[in-house]
Amino acid sequence: MRRTRTTGFMREFFGESRILNDNLIMPVFVDENLDGRRPIDSMPGIYRHGLDELHSYLSGLSEVGIKYVLLFGIPSRKDSSGSSAYDGNGVVQQALRIASEVEDMMAIPDLCMCEYTDSGHCGILSGQTVDNDLTLDSYGKIAVSYAASGAGMIAPSGMMDGQVAAIREALDKEGFEQVSILAYSAKYASTLYSPFREAADSTPSFGDRKSYQMDPANMYQALREIELDIEEGADMVMVKPALFYLDVLAMAKETFRFPTAAYSVSAEYSMLLNAVGRGIVPQGAITEAVASIFRAGADKVITYFAEMLASGNLSD
Ligand SMILES: [Zn+2]
Image 1 (tube, rainbow, N blue to C red):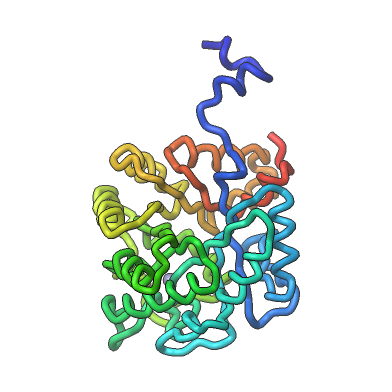
Image 2: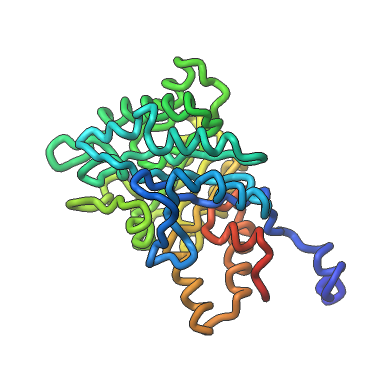
């Protein structure tokens, strides 16, 4: 076996999975209230971008070989119905139009309401709980608005039951049959989202998201969630987070043989970067971690390391 592991050509030749730029998706935060960029304290190296500098930032990503970005918007206005999410001139809609001018890039809008509701919850409230079915109507409206702004793919992340079917139906009805859906199918109620909530300003004002996100204890339930999304018309499914859930990812890929993405979330980024920064592990830990997600079965990996990996700035 050692023959296949010698350095150089031989090791590369026998490599089973490789980190390719085409398979990386970089999350991007766009802030309607901002001019220029602002660092996110809990995620060193990651910024919120104002609409004024978005084109130049995305062009830079494109130049290093990043083709796909996942867009998150921070709107200037929040209300109880999250109405700025489907405003034709909303932050993501504007960002989509800017991104469409960048060569060789597809921007995928994340579709949720937690950045847009004053409660910080992922849908519309009835009393103190999110009303699943009322929220589905809004998700449909948001999807159509994103498609009308040029999105070729939409990524619903709210974990409402029936969200993929509702979005598919709304898109088809408005003539957007070609717009595909990347579904956050198995999204866990994870502790690893904390830095993201600072980044996207989406902390719930009360309670938590355990009623709609999955219990980390469950694997077979994730398969059921994924199966439902495939039945409802998802074009690609997703497991989120990634590193603590590689078993779920591997089983999902083996079970369905369906296009599958994994989202390596904010704290996965911050923990690794922190460990590298303090000299606890070498920089190669980053490549090893991302490679493990591909090895587990991901076709696409959403990671805050995408830009760094594509730039080739990482050593072993
Ligand atoms: Zn949400």
